[in-house]
Image 1 (tube, rainbow, N blue to C red):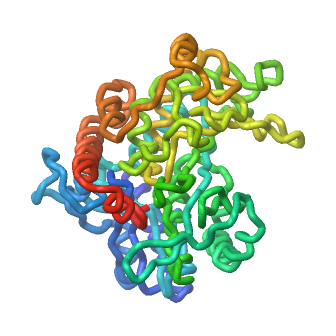
Image 2 (tube, one colour):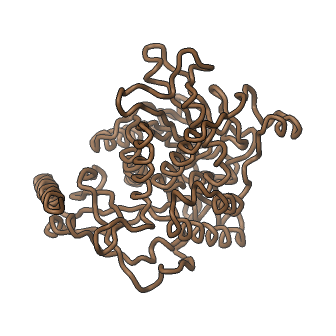
Image 3 (cartoon, rainbow, N blue to C red):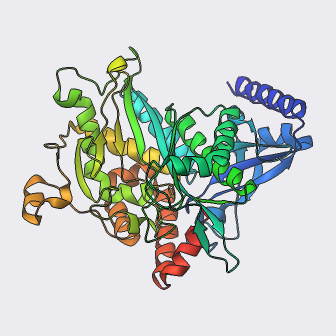
Length: 460
């Protein structure tokens, strides 16, 4: 088996090296996303690419204890001693349309012996995909990308690209060329764009990417985020995917759409023509699992200090553990289906998510939470057909609807107490992630709003 695996890696390395050389690529980025949600990496010369695909590139273990301010959290075993290998997945190779003679791949974090490192986010997602497959479930996932386009002022502050209205055709005109270049750059990387429109906030844009399997969706998430930022930069603009780049404007979400499919028949397991809102018992149990684990899950899906300015009642971003059909104030929205393919388009959306997340961690934790609901046959309760913020406290209590944790620190508390999520993550990933988030909370809570927005604006 080892010989077969070694030959497969060698063949892939040869094929990717040939592809890079034929495309005139000189530099290849090995990209990973850390516990702070920041995409980082190292770059190899094409002359060493073949070996680097097989052997990886060395990286200190301390990088998974680094937060988004480049502060090192105290995590046992993540200090100056120790190294891993960031080892690329050849299937993710793509030439970068926005960087001359450059390409990129996403990586797994492997130990020196070649086995997955316990603090590797991408390996965590793979484990959750397998856990779903063991139950006969294959997921499809996609994210809605919301971001704010801005210019940088001489004083270092940012100003939105425009102050037009939601879905405004004027905004479409103002942003047309940069949006067109983003779409073409994504499609050149085999990332299909489905929709684009200007959103509510000043300078705010939204783009939806076609759904795919969770691992590919997470890889596409990274490449989409990189593409939006880089193409905008070449237009003299700054694309902020932070949850609240301007505290007085609508925030940026990263809503996660998901559907469940039978691994044998290919049938959509969320669809039942006779069920309420055409939702199956399996689909409802998956949603129930998400709602039950949402307080801790938020630490991974709304992963920054800045996130909790966005998660407020009546902001259409969701603030309560409610669900309902096309309820955009619920944590989980059951999306309406399209007549041409009712079964194929049955899906739900986690609205309590933004683009400060590490997608490998967020997607994996969402799967772990949902599968717990399926195994235990949980019920999400009655759907909420109004804004849950309009209920009285007594009404919400009666319906089992709870307010989210209101800070990053509170949701990290909830994560540490959630045995299902921490068991799925494992001890090292749990310890390193929570330590990083605690340090971020401590650092930002001692500063003012200007410091917060400055240090979130262009990190994600």
